[in-house]
Image (cartoon, rainbow, N blue to C red):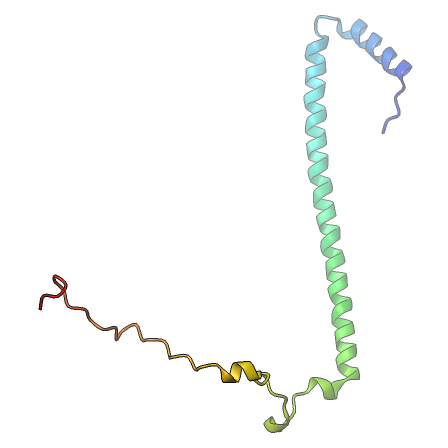
Length: 127
């Protein structure tokens, strides 16, 4: 990113030791590390926000293109989109049952929950 070579880094370290002093150098490096961490977090948050805005703009653009294409297709094929006026001419919504399904025994309707038979209370066999 900054393209700092080994010799340049060595010069920076020597100047820091001379200016700050070897006693306060660890504290200065910790403080610099905290500031760099804060800057990275803020820049990452900012970058994420920008990327989100770009994605939303791209999605809006794609939705606009899809709506235009859909309108174009609907305009080109208006007869296929309209439902038939005669219900008898409409295709069946449910396909006919297969031969195996038609031979199956009909199932009993489900029992109503309000009308369940009442069992006598007490010991079995005693009435």
